[in-house]
Image 1 (spheres, chains in turn cyan, yellow):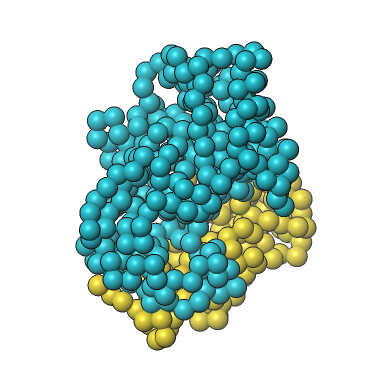
Image 2: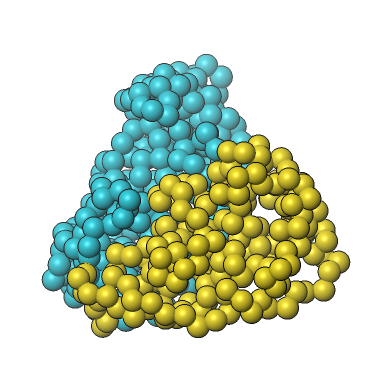
Length: 275
Length: 174
């Protein structure tokens, strides 16, 4: 399993990367940590003729805080975000989810924005972005734009990103006081692709539950503060609406069951840690 | 802006286990093949070639990396460490390697190089590891011989020994 041939461009600044993207469009792919892209190249599921490496661009590897926003630029590796000392206070959901993102060895290389760009339906970063109503900042030679996570993820490894755009940063909101967060996941081995992942955000008057690994993209649903059988009914309706499919890893029935049970556990934990 | 053509070979220079090395690489050459075929450093094993099995794990600037998910051209200027760089001398085992031997933490040995490299990186970050933490680190590797239990036992014992032992000198051989 070796990649097909490609030219390799090491962009020295953002402008060079955008120029190369504008010129090569759908023939080009951005490479950052490479932990999602290289498997695609090795298996020849992707055969770009140009790779544009953005990791030498200065300044892209620093997480920034701007008011209530945690801005994670394209060069930030997953392990670096995980090591951010203030993360668990700033955004507990992200802090809870990151240890589930791949393995120790892949987090050391893989980037946060790369995971968003890859848009695997079971991935933790897209799930957290959708659960938290985060944003994706896109940049091209033509324009800069910001897209809500719910609009960005369009399907199985499909996003709203145009061929000449790169993800400049993803933005997570800082947790608001009085909000509870929880993350749970079921996988065959810790670090493998989730069979089902759940992220819950509970506020004073609403439950938001986002689910990965069932539909072709992470999906979020909001409920009032239900409990008992009313919550069971709501979760059951959500589970069926996600249109689960059988595959090699799990049946649709198991996935629906996990939405009901894991979803409920995740909501309960978010309620219990509502500060 | 450096642009490396797909059809040509390009000089890639980096440090391997403390020694400067270089090779000619097409952009699509994987780091696994660069190490094994380009430089003859066959201690890094090739398993699944899509980042799942962990056999090819190396260190890049001290952090673990799947060599099969790394392009040779991405190693330019980096400090790379492989299993050949773990032992203090050609005829001596590192503390971790010796613990693996004592605890029968390997049988066929195919996965061992990657696991040793991961544990080496992790213990530098976390010299006081818990068993759970070590299980998570080893969880990034597939071993079909040992059942993992002896690996965890060896890692725990080596971690305790390393806390008492003076730091090893930098290895000088490849």
